[in-house]
Length: 123
Image 1: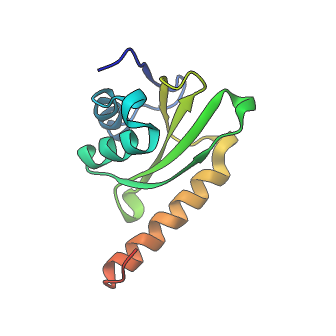
Image 2: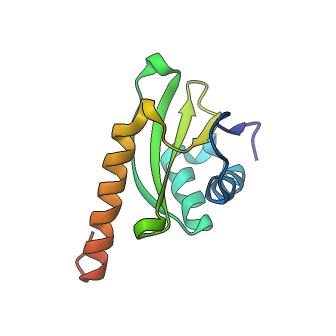
């Protein structure tokens, strides 16, 4: 394990899903495995679904963002994992007003994947 750090965004409600994801992320070596593989491994270990990841605007101090789906239907929770510019620090957060559009897209994408999965279509 490296000296990476992980934090749950202050001021937001801490959910069991966010804590489980945080614990699974702590077991990953972000520097060696890379962001996407590390997040995918952690998400799989926590029993959630990796939706997508993309480069973040550097003006907010992050390199990349990944969207995660925990649960299904009305119980679904979208979580975002941010990789800081240092390439080692991760932050898990529930979407808020500043990233509402990402959360809406992630929830729609997760719903689509649920539908495709229930019809037997390949994703």
